[in-house]
Structures are given as structure tokens and as C-alpha cells.
Length: 511
Image 1 (tube, one colour):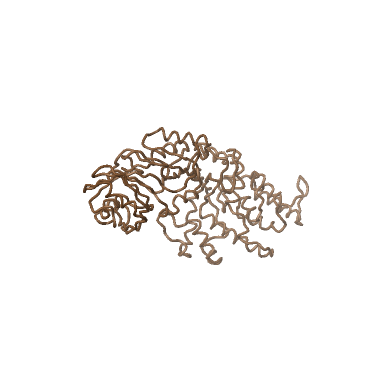
Image 2 (cartoon, helix red, strand yellow):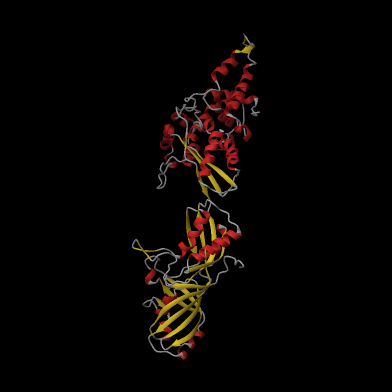
């Protein structure tokens, strides 16, 4: 049943004598059958006792008992390795992880914690975080049996030993999946994390910092330098002789078992894309905060994100768009592409009808914005929104005031200007949040509609990233050439609308 062979007997005995639990014995004997680790602990223990007793049955010294012939060695084995354990019988290698946390009780505890967080999922991946000192103890135990392995001329490497993490998953993930009614797979958007700590043995790793100091470098975000990866790296560098001088082989028994941390869940982000129109000249795209003080109520991103957060039960969001308009600029036409990353959504799937209803909810929540083509997209698809950011074009409509009186003939020459190259220093109004630079931009075309002696409508098709207001008034000469230069009069922009953002994303959804 346990797939153990004759050559494993001395290793099993050596490991049991060191106090190892039965699942750790199976790991060091390289038993790779997941079903073995799922079996009840007591059944495994009895079967191991029977396995080593078979060796003793061949012993020449046999004594008579009430039950018939019995090996003294076998009786000694059964007395030494009783299946009944006390609090002090903690496995010195896994520190109780494979003893006390592989039963249905713990699996239900994990499952109940997941259910309390009310996630919706069809599958999950189980991740396990173990104390770094388990790597030290495993290395110690490996060196302890290495001599036995060599004497038997067995070809067996440390990398062949089944990892504690794998053995634990094999033992419990099926039970957790059954409790939750979900498949436990290797890759899933929903992650259930189980972690363990063992304060009693935290100093097990400390000697490695003296022997391999280059492996342990302080970092700002780490509470301890003794991370699992750092410890594993140090164990790969330290010689067997040096390790044995600083750490006992086999490892000392511990008085306490590991403590399980709170079970946590995390779902990968869901991405929602669409296009929005903004009809208000008093609505910023993102919350407007100046010197720590909020200006204006609401924003485009908040009006869009609030219903999304509620429907997907997400913990937070990140909003991005294809460019941005000023607070006093409207976005008309087919709207501006946007994407919302919903962080740790507890619900990840909505039907087409539910998405359409969600879009309607957003549109009914305010007359300041409207969204269209709302849809769930992949993370990779959102990158298309930013691709060719400066190559795409945008069309604007602006209400212009001129100091000099004009008539229709003063405007005709503007329609003949094509692909006008301008140089724009970072505008003064955004210099506090954007680096100082000179950006080359193109005004592809212009057309005009005369209104009166001091007003006309200017329509422009420009390269994305062009500062339209600065092109009109010049920004104290920081944009050259500008409309003032071209018309030889002071001019200013009174109103500005984005008429179109020429990027074919996300895919249009028919009404």
C-alpha cells in the first residue's frame, strides 16, 4: 500500500527513531503517490510498524509468548513506535504540519473560512506558506540518513525527497475542494492561502547568517531577512561539514507544533472596459485634490467604478483611460476608451444581460456621464488601449475669442494648414505633476466656423497628447507656433470639447 521496498527499511527505522512523523518518513523514502498522504495518520502509522516488523521477523532470536512465536525486535519496535502520541511527540522535521493539519477537521476549518468571505468560484489553487526553518530541519534530516543511503549504494538525491508543501496539499486539497464544491487545480484565478508559523524554532536559521552572510540582505519590505528563498540559497552554499558543526543531525525535537495562520483568499483582478462621455464642465476625470483638500464632488472614475465595485464585490479599483480631459472639457462623440481593474473581486463572472444592466445602472446614476460598450476584457487586452498612445489622433472643437476684430476671410487660411509641427514645453498648469520637457506634436488639420467679430469655432484633428489650450493662447511662448502667432492677434479658448478619440478599442457592442 505504501510502495516501500526492502532497501527502505533501515531508512524508515532511522527516521522513526529520530521522531519523524509517518508522512515525513514517506517523503524521505520518495513515495510519490498522492493517495498515500491522504490516508488517515493512524492507518499509516500502523502500516509502517508492520513494515519494519517484517524485518524483525527474520531475526534469529525468537521468544515464545502467549500468542506464539514473536520477535523480540518486533515487540521492541511496537513499544518504541506506538501510534498514540502526546503533545511532546512533534515531528522534528515538519513541526506537526503533516501530523495535525492533514485531517478533515482542519480541511473544514479552511473551507469554513473561505465560505465566510463569500467568494464565488468554480476552481481554486491552494498555496501554502511554511516557516523557513523547516528547510533547515529538512536539510539536517537528509544529512542524517545520507550515510545510510550511501551504505546501501542507493542513487538518491535530496531533490528526490517529496516537499512538505506537496505532501500537505496532497493530503488536504481534495477534502477542501469537496467541502467547497470546487476543483482544486494547479492554476486558478482564485487563490486560497494557508500559512504556518513556529515561534519556538525561529532561531534555527540564525547560524546561516554568519556562515553565508551574502544570502541575507535586509530589504525595506521584509520583516525578517530569513525568508525561505534566502535560507534555501544558503543551504545550497554551506558545506555538509560546516552545517553539521552548527546544527544537530537529526534536528532536535520541538515542544510545540506549528500554529496555523488565518486562511486568506485572493481572486485575480477582473478588467472592465468601455467608452465614456462626459457632459459636464465641472467634473474631473479623477478625484481632484489640491494641497490635501478635495475640490469638486465626484469624478468620472468614481461614477463608473462605484456600481462596478458593488456588482463584483471588489476590494478596490484602478482606473485608466486613453488620455484624459481637463475638468472643464467635455468628451462627446463615441467617447473615450477606459479600463477599470477591479481588485480582489469576490464575484468574477457576470452574464451579458447583467453587464448590460450594469451599464444602464451607471448611466442612470448621473446625467454628467454616459458609458457604452461595457464588457469584461483580459489584462492583456487593456494594453492595446495604451499602444500607439502618441500615434493615434483626436478631434476637438473649441470656442475661440480673438482680441482683434475678424471676419470670415481672416479664418480661411487655417483650413489650408496641414500637418503643422509644433513644439510644446510642458504647460505651466501641469508642471507640478509632469516633468519639464519639449514635446513635438502635429496639428493634422483645422477648420473654422465664423460666429461674430471676436468669436469662431475651431475644429482640430491632432496627434494624441497635444495640449490644445496651449496651442491656442501660446502659454507665454512655451508652445510654438501657436494660434496667436498664426492669426497675429491675442486669442484664448473659452470652451473645449473632445469630439473623438480615434482608437478602435474596446470592440463595439451592438445595441
